Length: 430
Image (cartoon, rainbow, N blue to C red; front, side):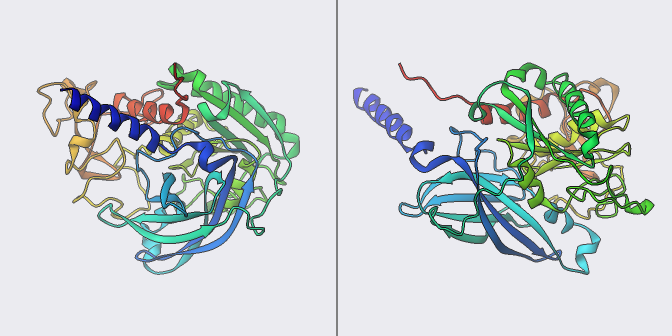
């Protein structure tokens, strides 16, 4: 018995030392890798662009290794001398969505992308992985870097004024959200600040964010555009704006995005951040959200507050769309023979890893969409843009319909897990 206790103690002791310590490998600044991903429906090629050093690091200094493994893409950072994994994050991109459209069958395109990590003290190797059709990560890109390389671009911030409109403390133990204006002129910066304040206040009225108000910081960057508004190609409206945002992405009228992602990163670098929200100065309904990439939302539509939260659910917690009747440009977005990585949908291939533990005893799987289960957690067919073969946790939620303050228990748990991941504080030893 004593021997077992010693072995357990040694195991705990060694595991505690095996944890990656931020100060051993990183400085409190950001290394950004810009690259391009190009190809068509069946191919992807990654092209290196440049490295940049940015002055702030907004992420966790405790949870350096990704434990969620959400996203179509994953990057891992290794210490070159020891081959120790020192940082990783999952993410998704606009190009990966484009690959699922009909257009990608007949042409090739290239999209700018980037990843960020704490700035390394030692030589590193960066590997990027992409999921195949069966959800397995395959290595697609590798590059090394000596942090003293004089080709790393430094000191190129645009110099915009910034403001913190919600302060819970230091970035390392809080979720830092930066809101960037798009299509607000210099004279409309007052409107931008008022709009951002309005959306921030709404953010904290929604569950579960209302209970975690002290875990967030909100930042603004006062970055004006030449023109007011954004592009609306279907109405032949074209604007000269900071980020060239546009409706009709993939020919979906309500899908509001920008292809100029590295420009988004340039503006966001003015503050520490974990999440980027682009607030677009328009009354038109629409938005977009991509996991660990960005969120966009129209500022002045009657349903904009809902859109803001819905898209943040995508970008922050990798929540999937739960609707299946609205028109989208994607084709065969999910392979029904494997379990999707998103926490709020299932093909039942590996339901044990999803919300099975949250079902009440006796709940049928699948669950019928009948009044008996209207407010229950279940396994309801329809979600992820298809009516058959994919299941969602509730009959209605803010990821399915324009439901205000209605993420539901399963989605809330995913959000809370992510909040805790980014806001964990160092353990205080006695």
